[in-house]
Structures are given as C-alpha cells and as structure tokens.
Length: 68
Image 1 (tube, rainbow, N blue to C red):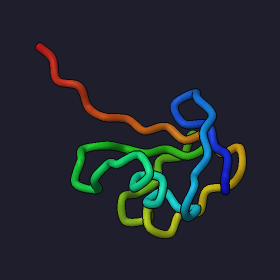
Image 2 (cartoon, rainbow, N blue to C red):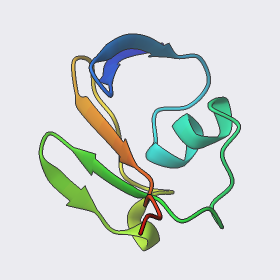
Image 3 (cartoon, rainbow, N blue to C red):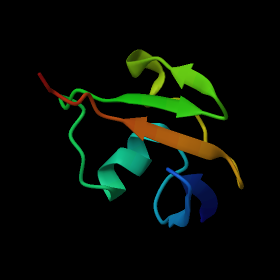
Image 4 (cartoon, one colour):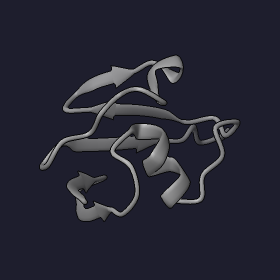
C-alpha cells in the first residue's frame, strides 16, 4: 500500500502503485478530460499505466471547468 497526498488530502492506494491504479480506485475513467501532475510534474496520459507512485508523492488531479 502506498500513501500519497491527493489534491491536498492524504490517502492510500490499495491495489497497484501506478497513476492508472489510482484512477481505478477513484472510479475515474481514462476517457475523462483530466490532467494529472505528480510532485508538480505533469504526467502524460500515455505514461499513466507505467508511472509508479511512491510514499508521500503529491498528486494533483485537475478537471477543466466550463464557464462563461
């Protein structure tokens, strides 16, 4: 199990250690329009399946907001 800081809240990843495993745990679909940064570095969508998360990584999940 890996402990991370997700959008400024501590949480544990229960299965797997990748960005994609985190998305599955959060019940988010890869097709959603989101961007992910780990420790202030954007992670390319193509790297999500392989990008390993480590204890105390700071993960930011950003979704676009529509407005007018």
